[in-house]
Length: 140
Length: 375
Image 1 (cartoon, rainbow over the protein chains, first blue to last red):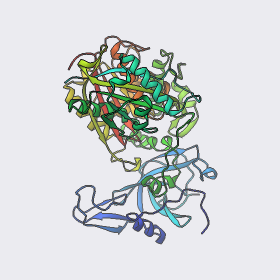
Image 2: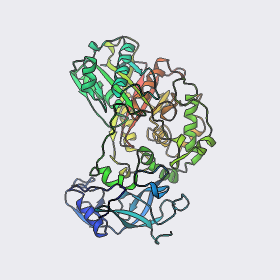
Image 3: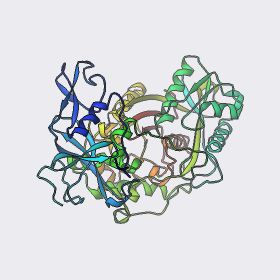
Image 4: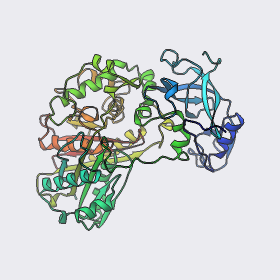
């Protein structure tokens, strides 16, 4: 496995199923059976109703752009990227997560809020992280 | 029992202080606050502080034998929490007089180890992989959603920095004092779109300290604590429930106003933690001073500027006065100065001042209602 210049997340017991999923190319999130709602980030019980009757499910990978910034001062490992979009996306299942937007030239004009996105995965060391690109496929 | 702030002071200097360690900043501020209160270290039986070097070392270095300690560390709002907790402790008889200190070598980083956030932490797993680099890339993330939903313009966001510079222009201790225009703000370097450099806070060295006690122990005209509130929301910005409003701001504000028994019209002066230009906009709305979507126009119309009906961040704020990293102490200090009539940019006839402190990125919040009159 090649070393990644970008930060590599280190799974913990409660997050391992999420990272096992990304390694397989799927986005897994938790769903509460008691109140029938999804939640993220991984936790042992539902943050809304408190039930521990929760299960890991596979999300569709479809999302919309909730908010973002275009960072002009790169973090370590991102020096070669040019200005990059640090975004929060809302999955079809209703939960949000931070990500980067890829597959499109990063300008405000190209990134209207609520645009439709789909998940892709990027290898980082031993882990694959979920990134999002335009739902219609990359435009660059 | 009436709880008061009986002493308040900052370090002699603010700004770039590479000749002072973090601990020295704490201790100089503590000694200045004791002198301001007309007290000695032997009057102090409670110590509260956040970050390095912590309440044990602060107490030990000053020669205080504490009966009560509080190391609540929830970000830049921590000092507001300390005031609230100190009030409860004094009322409960756990101690009589509390010293709250802040010192931070935020710019020079002398004796100030950076906190390590491991790759297995929550932020290490779910935010750091995406190239976040400190608050300018995280705290700012909510703004575009707020702008889309409320119609706030880039020019109105820039007006926050312009308005606060008008106050800093009157304050010889402010780091930046030259008046600026919206055009200046929008022409300054892009840090993280939509935020330009002048919409981001300073990074400075400095400190401040407070003495909290009961009214009868105060030796100078005190500032009364009429009410307080505290709350928290998400530990990471991406999980904040609604990017257009802070639940922690709302809850802490409601609690503080309810305890104080005041209405918004009673407030003469306001301090809202301003790490970035959008935060005072959220604060004005979440505290209930204006309705949703109205804060940007309210600031742009000059209502928070000198001569306006709701003077806001009258020291110049974190954008122009100073921002060590945990700014809340300086917001409290300016409220105390305004209530004593000792501020550099003094507002006439201030009787009630409200302070809203933020911790992390909308992660924690506390609100204080202060007055120069008894409850």
